[in-house]
Image 1 (tube, rainbow, N blue to C red):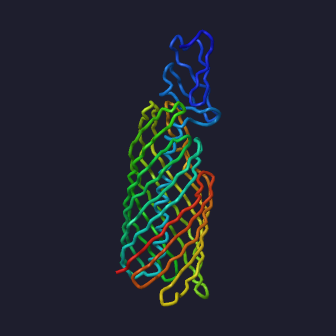
Image 2 (cartoon, one colour):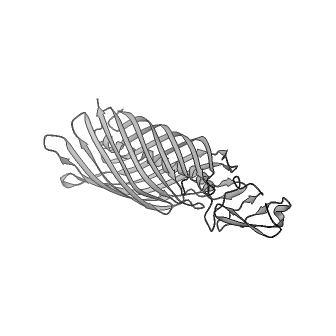
Image 3 (cartoon, rainbow, N blue to C red):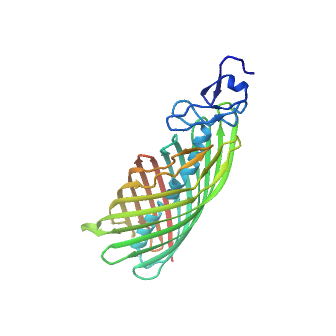
Length: 357
């Protein structure tokens, strides 16, 4: 199969020189990529060793593993984006108790520090209930599910199904100062379907758990003719348990945990309008500067350590409305867009309905 002259061994578009060492059964080390990755290739192990790409790119197997690890913070934040609107609704009607339902969809382009980027399409549904304990204090619970599809390249896909349960509380005084808090726990079910260059498929699946929370402090300023301005700051943290798993092609991956710590400074500006026939409409626009502080999030793949963090800055823009259709029914919607060093949000859409008792 191998001659005494040097042959070219093609592996996921990476050509590794294999010489007489192959005849002797000795392993051949692929040249490290610019990112520091390398692989040991054993003769005859084309399906199990295809973890590198040519140039500075990584193999589709490696890309998929890294993407499944670092997507959790993006998903966790996408699931909670509509809760800010829910807090605003509570402050508009502070003496009510009710049920609410909210659907969301979004598309992100994610570019981790040490890996090739991918597209993430997210959709989910959240059900919640809350009650006013006093004129200033409200508590609630939520439960939901979401599905996120990761698109890498060359037919390689990933999927993460998330189920979550959370609790939240809000406090506000008569001068417009408020504090909102959330805690949410998730179960992530992760699956990889890798299409390698030789048309062989590799698969793997695992599940892990995460818990996170956020705290927001802000103040609403009521202006003339129904206008208002609301500056705010927010911190959010998430920790997802580490996991070891193996793809069917032999790639082995492990990490200690996935951590996220994000800060946000922003503002919302809108107006409350009276609708013909009763009810009110509150359109608004919002803008925020964001920062992901968590560095590292290292992943070990076949004895190589890779930085898999999403640390970086960004900006978020959005618009939306809250329509009070009647004393009992309320409709709301949000439209979001974001640009960042590691995560771009091409679009985000969420819509909700609330019934007050």
